[in-house]
Image (cartoon, rainbow, N blue to C red; front, top):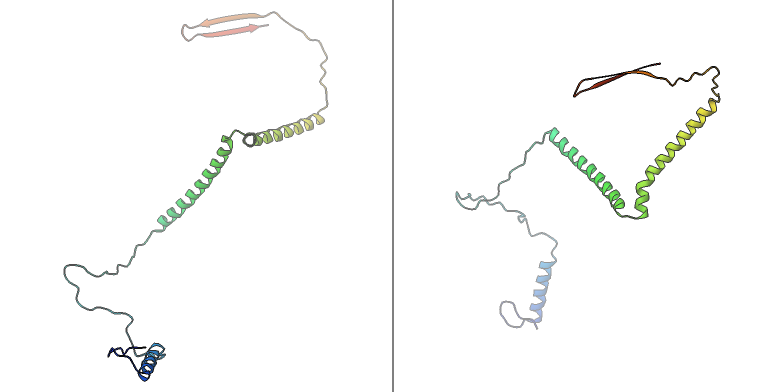
Length: 168
């Protein structure tokens, strides 16, 4: 049972149907009832003291080209140094753990470099020895002298100089 909205008494069937039709028409109306404002501007004067509304303050800073370049370069350098630091940290973490893997990681590049140097040296030695196959044979008299005539002179006290003259 429905009650009359203004009278507080029960509505008749005709009144209830009319009220339902009015509510349905108001709820599902497709035409607009007219223009209604979507925004409001208060044109009243601003008080001299107290709260004031916000004022737009446009930002018009100009950044010089050199400052922008320095900023970009510093970001690039920082990223590069960070990458190098991370790589060094990973290598040092691997070297810090005393395992076979860390020992091999530390010594394997040096061993490979030594092996390559040895192979290149051996190849150069074989190439040179293959070209030069002559044996030096000396023929003639050889004199061996064991007598030495020497004259030694020392001069000076604190900063002494010694001179040895050897004559055959």
